[in-house]
Length: 395
Image 1: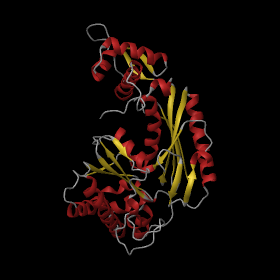
Image 2: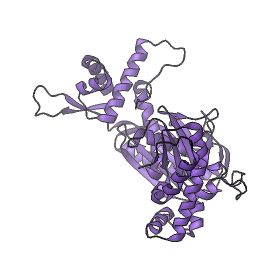
Image 3: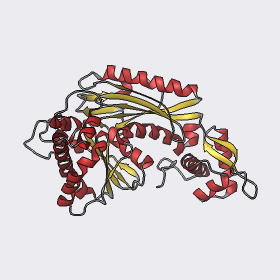
Image 4: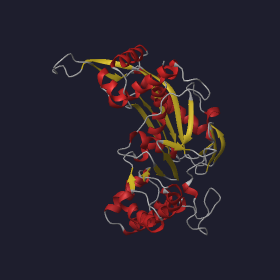
């Protein structure tokens, strides 16, 4: 998979300086993803001469973005090269997530390691955005303080939200499951860091692209939580739509005369396959880790739970049919909390897809990231801003 690299603005000549920044990015991506590597190994990875790579590496060391660990494989014949790794100090990315029933924040370093994390369970539906984001700010300060004690310098903050975010803005136009409308996150979340706000399904899809095992460059990611969202990745890039609203799978009607949805429609797939709908159909009330309880009871053969999961899988399969027929993805990736229930969701989901699609995707993959996808995608997006442009962001 080709990493997005520094690109000059449209209309800017492809100068020697632009090429240098692009090559610095290529070195950073290579070392961050594959390190420890010698200079010679980096040169082989990215197709530049060893002399050119040495110059670039020296600059990245001066910027504090790469560290030398000393000789690599000292028993090897010939002069050993120094092992290069992404710095464990310096720039880092901060990710945060507003969920319907939780808040979370984490810090990820340049190599992708989580260096600090905090999460609280809290019912956010119907709460005013100000107090919710105030509590999120406390978690962000907690993890950034911890990271700074380890020598890290947060360089960007990305926030995942369960709602529609207007493209290239910080505004949540609508988050039905929170009952938020036209909410400017930047006005309510105190931070001095460069801020990005995006839909949780988009960040979940990016996490799959960057961190998933054998995830193709073209796939449809389904984030099944209390709400259901989707995101489409084409040729390794997120397809956002004109306004940034692509992926509203949860509000595709599967039964037009069904129950009223918070979005104002009727019979939306969330009313049958969303977390709360499945719990309700299974007869499971309030409590901690209710999805875990669903999985436990399903494994024990509970008939009501298995019936609820079959129904959810069927509804999700019907909703996905249109998307698969229209978009022709290589694969469908099931993420979010309900990915833990894949053994009981997939049979009816895949049956509906097979029955209703002319050219079905290669198959439904289950995310190994599960409910952590949106938070990790947010944090890694802030990290990749440094990897993509080490001079402009990391220097």
